[in-house]
Length: 484
Length: 68
Image (cartoon, rainbow over all chains, first blue to last red; front, side, top):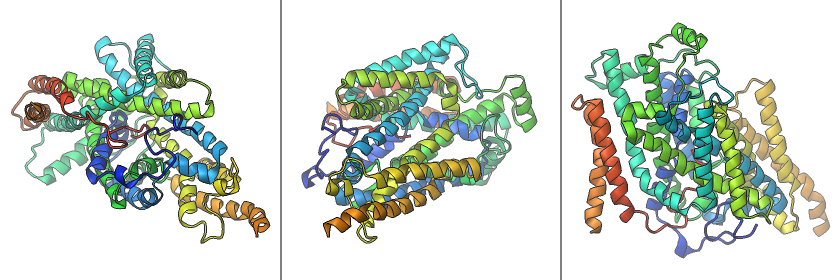
């Protein structure tokens, strides 16, 4: 990979970050808080309600799950990041070889494409507030109206062109918008809370009253909406822990945390988790819960009847935000979707360019944006976002296990670390087989052992770690013997 | 000038969240809440770019893509 085509961009791509370039704690608080207040939060929160989540499960599940995510950043990613001070891609290249990293890039790029598609979907729902075309429903797989297709096309084209032109301007808008977005997300929750108080007629005099409202009115639990998986405490906890699995356990954030002066700076990820993945998710979920309540859908029977009549409200961020906070809410949906879809398309474009190095970055990014836009037209991507996010983490997780074992345990377990670099190979079969077999095991566990996709990455990590040790010892033995 | 712009931005941020707090306290209706929030939003985006994020750090304040 050249400096220009490295998927993470930035400085010190192929050398450790020097002392003078290291950053203080505050830089990481700002970065994590801004990055994890994204367009997808407006989809994930409502989908929890659609999954029939109960108050205790969602509140405590998010507290515990986010804590586990922060601990993963602190004790898995950061210790390696501040010791090696290299990007994920450079470390992977030394362990796996350039050709395997190219395949990893391709997988990463495809995942980023779909994720950007979901972000475009979120932004396009805001367009529907003004043009009032038929919007997709919760169980729709295909685009359901010409208006929807046109809205996605326009939003997707704009985002793609800006991404292809380079996203430094969008990055600046994202930084400027971040504090304001946090306030609007909070406002969603406060407005929805008042609306719940009014519609239910309860009086809030104490924390106990508030919890009663949350438990009996807002997140009542019960059956999920049609087409959704029922979410329990464990689902919420694992989802919160693993939704950024690619970043912590998957080691993508080595690239970011290599700039940290101290390993413990990774605790700054708590700012992102508890602002974006606690407050924002709960606020967004309250908007949809209120929409269901206002439509009189307060029992499983009423929901079934509405679903049968095709009148079940869909969790569409644009209209939900407009009802709660007016134009400021709609702007928040557009900006949150746009500022997160943009770098995601840009990075996916760079990842694809690494596969076809002679193509221009502009063309590849436009192509990537077109793919993301086509994906965004299919509402199933957004309505099944919880499942997709779990899949995204699962696909990239085994390479995190490879880096972890290679960095800490390779020598102790009797094989060479950074084997591709030492042996001068471009494809380390030990890492490649580990990745694919671990994924195959995960898929088999989901398909035949009844383990849901939200949980499977935990055993999957240990499978990957075991396989990497096994294959490395086996495949390195002839080479090591010949060197003796 | 920078201080003035910063104060304006912080006032705009308060104007974005305070109406929702007042709505929760039943001291403001929803329509007023929405309009004040929009005003706060416009002022925030008019004042803040002049002083915030003009220097981008290597990781510091860049979105890296793929996050949720």
